[in-house]
Image (cartoon, rainbow, N blue to C red):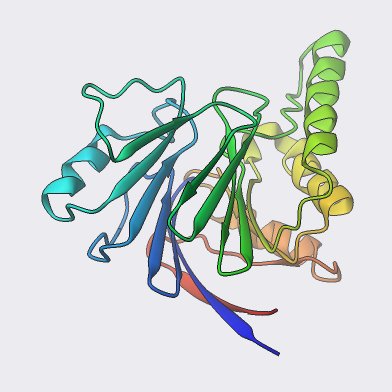
Length: 232
């Protein structure tokens, strides 16, 4: 049985560098120890919020002339270019051997499902069950409806690795979205993100889910990495 090795490095907040074979995927970079030396590098930006989007990414072209950018369509680069691809929710793109499908968000922009070498990686962006303590019952019900309706749209997709928010600002609701995502979509692995400087949050969630069929991988320090071996 073939084993696919997936290298994942945590950059900061919702930023990751993922390497599969000779391809590098970079998601929602704002800062952190990124390496864009690999010629086959694809940079993903889920939306324009400043905790997910740093225009510095476009300076990387001076170091890597073959780099490609996949952006939520609400982002407007200063100059259009052939290596920039804008995607709205529920669109697809084939970039070499990388297939990209977008889904919606419960905030701004898109979420990404990326398939490469039979490995399916989901990056949620700001897609989450935003269950804010103190909101009105109507607002809480609407947040739940929007999240669960989007989950239904994703159902049926194979997800090997999910990069998904666990946000301590939601207080005791910090992981309701991740819990529901795991229960409904059953990814093989989930890597927490969107916790900012609350570095204990992914560790707390990994401990909570230690008996889950989905393995929760805690990366909480910029530059920290892991390698996941997937049997295919």
